[in-house]
Amino acid sequence: LDLYRFTDDPRHLANAEKLAAGWTATRDFIDHGLFARQLCGRSAWLNSLLIGGSRLRVRTFKDNTNLCWGLLELYMRTGNARWKSTLEHWVGGFRRHLWNHGMVYLMLDAKLNGYNPSIKAAFSTLDLLCDLHHAGIEQDSVLQMAIAIADYWAGERWENGLFPEMPGG
Image (cartoon, rainbow, N blue to C red; front, side, top):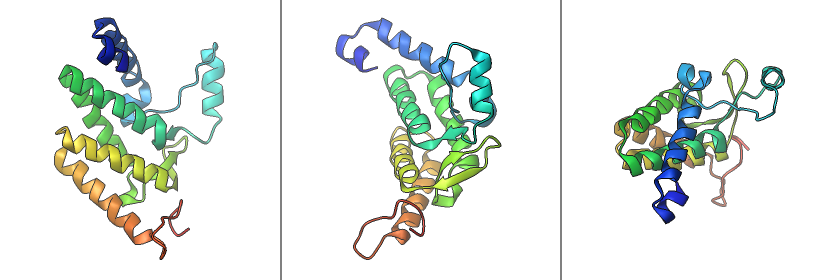
């Protein structure tokens, strides 16, 4: 999208939409509203074996938050309701699997059980949720979740004003 912004070449926008469409067509996104890890090896069979044998299925920080920022930018550039609907679907998946009442999970295992709540997951999603609210996507629910995350982590702050990486840390 940055290439499109700098050049106004519609091919770059079309490429961004093609990539976004691929990610939103994955089984995990369709079924659960989240972007699961995808390996890019030459063998689809080997990729599924490696991911299937791994404990890690979904990462919040980077894999989901960064992709959602890209989708948000795509929606803002095109106004296409498809990307707004995609982000609303992601918000539902985030609420069901990652939010954890403000103590946001960094990862989900193969069965979509959350683990490793962390400040990285919390602050990256807090920032994203605020951007979604500003863009008019799921306004009430994303704002409530953002406030809950901020409130939870404010209670975790150390006496010196810093935050622990993990709750109770």
